[in-house]
Length: 110
Length: 114
Image (cartoon, helix red, strand yellow):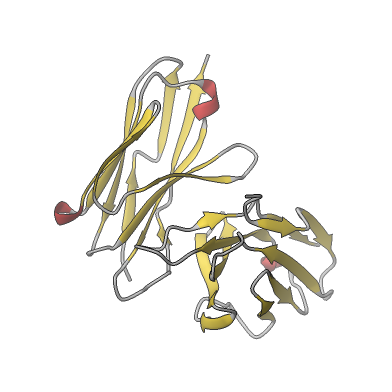
């Protein structure tokens, strides 16, 4: 199956700092999603981004499908950004099967 | 829209008991997915339905697990008999199948089997 690797595994930020999370995948994909799992366990959709760049407030994401990676940028981090960030992909021949990475645990301190 | 609805949010049961988890997808979505999250294995797909028909159940761990979707607005995941290793958070997700099939997740059911 497809391998999804996220880095770094853990990240500690001071409030106001910027950060970049990375997702590498081992094969072509036709779906890539970024999720935030908050401390209450809910999975929040951040971006659906199989290619290109999108922005939503302080968050933005870029996927370079030809080079098999995606980046999630968090700017001016806030304590509410704490949680685990997951990247998940779907291969063209595995329609519907989201394959998740192990996640990046982010802690934003006041 | 209310989003994907799951019930119960928490379930504590004893080994050997039957457990039924419930899901209502987003209205108009014709794909429904069941995922399980554990510390050891992370998030993994168990089964998914399209138009109420199971399409891929290769992720269902064993015969003790079964899932049904009797209509477009309701699905169940049943574990019988339950075992302590089934303890996990079970998520339901739905999609309208457009484009690359963006999936939206429910709040999850945290299952503890004693």
